[in-house]
Length: 295
Image (cartoon, rainbow, N blue to C red; front, side, top):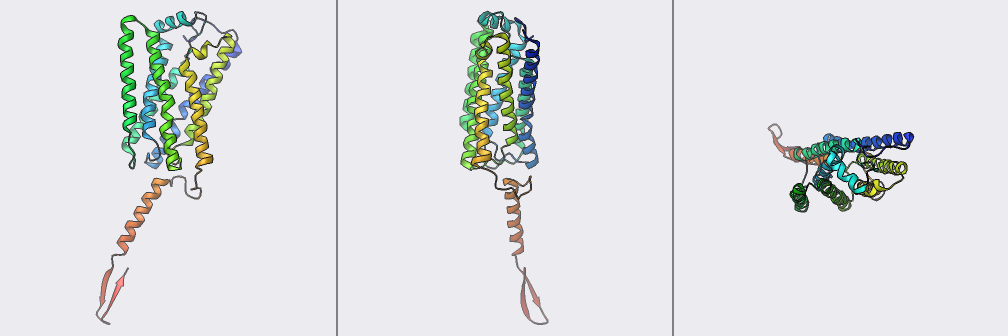
């Protein structure tokens, strides 16, 4: 279905395109797991910015609507070809749809972890809540405008615009939080490294298709996918700098599972134990008539 309206000129390029696409899918999909596993092991989400997760869920939900619509809807595909040419391939592949479904599921699981695990004093900000509400209200308005006129391509492009905006702003709260804490503890670098690999291979996949078709419509015909990779790569590099250069972990001598939250709990336990020990027990020895303090 992804090739409707055009065909590949080179079989090797088609194979390379598919391989790069599924590498991007695997990298981006697996990138969700290091954070989920880290949260599970620590039984804590301290260090993970909640605004990032909420904005990310909105981003991936809107992106899923766009990808699924373009890939499965013949009406959307027809309007796409009418706009960009019937000799052009649609800009969404099967791996894009698979990634979006998986991303929504894993982001929802992360949000559930926020609800059940230790989160300290962190909470979702009013700003992030307002942004999410405005985004979905805007999408609802687009639905009411598009349906009477059957402007399906324009409608799904609105959802694509929502995901682009969310992509641009979703990383900012986490980057700022890392800066304020001068630490990346609680924020998985494995997520970032895999995300970077996915972004690079995604661009490579789009470039291969453009080379085969001798057209760059693939890039500006799906501006959401183009900006998704560009913005992701930029912030991935920023997070890598924060983790390895600006705020490297100083806890190398500690066991892997002994993070900031674990240390805080141990200190509290130690303080409680010390308080119990300092409660002196008076022992009066009748034989000597002396009074001793037992610690």
